[in-house]
Image (cartoon, rainbow, N blue to C red):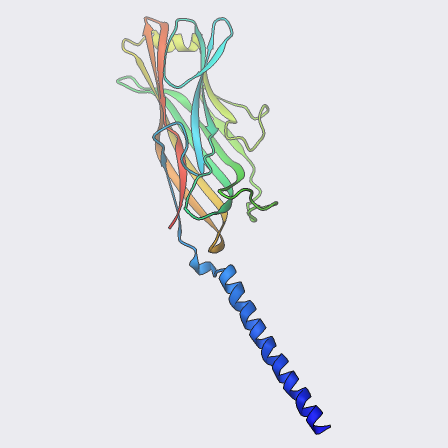
Length: 272
C-alpha cells in the first residue's frame, strides 16, 4: 500500500509539473501570438491640402464646380471652360474618402469623423465684394479601411457623441438640408445664376477673381488593429486657408468663360 501510495504521489507530481509546463507554454504562446499593445507604434495625424484631386489621406474634403448651360445640360468642371451659354455655376464641398493609412503592416481601422467648417466667399481685388459664407456644424462620417482581405464584422468605434447637424448661410449660399441625409457634408452649396453673374460683371474691367476660404476642424475617433495589437484614440486637426479660386472672363457684362482651381484638404494618419 505504501509503495502504491508513493507511486500515486509521483504521478500526481508528474501531472502537476506537466500542468505547470502546459500553462507556461500557453502563456508564452499567447504572448507571442497576441503582442502587448506597447509594441504598437505611435499614431500621428496631420491635415493639409493635397497636390491632386485624388485624396491620399484617411479622410478628405473636396470641392466640385458644376456648370449648367442654356440648353439644360450640366457638367462638372475642374479647369478652364470657354462658353457664352453658361446659365448657372455651383460650388459644392463634398466628402472624398481616401482611407489610406501610412503603415506597412497588415491592419484594419475603423474611423468616425465629426467635422465643423466655414467657407467664406468673395470677389478679391481693388473693390472686394462679399458673396456670402456657410457655417456647417457637426457633420459626421464613419467607415472602415483595411489592407487585409476583410475587416472583422461590426467593427465600429464606440463613443461617438450624438451630433445634431446645424447650417447657417448667407449671400449666394443655400442649404440642401431637405434633399440630402443630415450626415452629408455637401448639405450646402454656393450658386449663382447668369443674371446674378452679370450684375457682378457689369462694373468690372478685368477678369473677376473669386476666392473660397475654408476653416475646417475635424475630430477623428479611431480604432486600429495591427500585428502589434489594438489601440483606440481621438485626434483633432484644423486647417485654415484657401480651398478654391474661380476666375470669370467677360466682355462687358457677358460671361465668356471661367477658370476653376481647387485643392483637396486631407487628414493623413501615419503609424511609426
